[in-house]
Length: 162
Image (cartoon, rainbow, N blue to C red; front, side, top):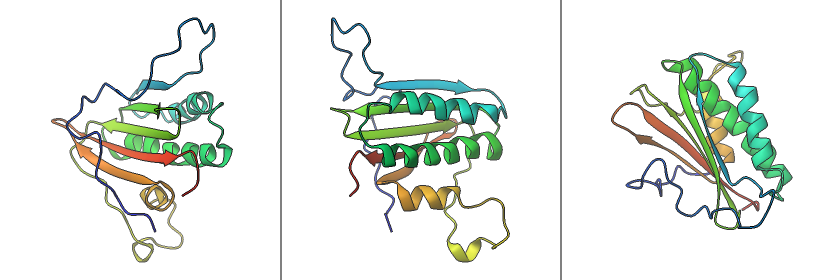
């Protein structure tokens, strides 16, 4: 089972992704390298729109199985932010370097940190409580970074299976 890892972005500007190169000059239709969206209060239809935007970002990633995992994990984090906090969030996703790594961050404005439930804590018939366990199990790295107001829950996936 994967372990929660230290956040390499700690101490870095939350709005910058210095390792995401700018689009090549002269390329009339460069592939997107990142996106950021603000999601309204309790707008659960934003989960599907975020998945669609992530799909567009990952269309040329060359890692279809990992892209499906990225969609699942992004859906879980966005849903958690919209349902279990004040209901608003900021989603940021970026392909780093030459596209070998995807990083997705979901920032909300509630101080309470999510807690990872183990299988014994989740009732068999429960309809919730498995999202963070999926992130923990499927992501190559994940974590929580506190902010002055709220937190960012993030995960990373390499293009190639470990």
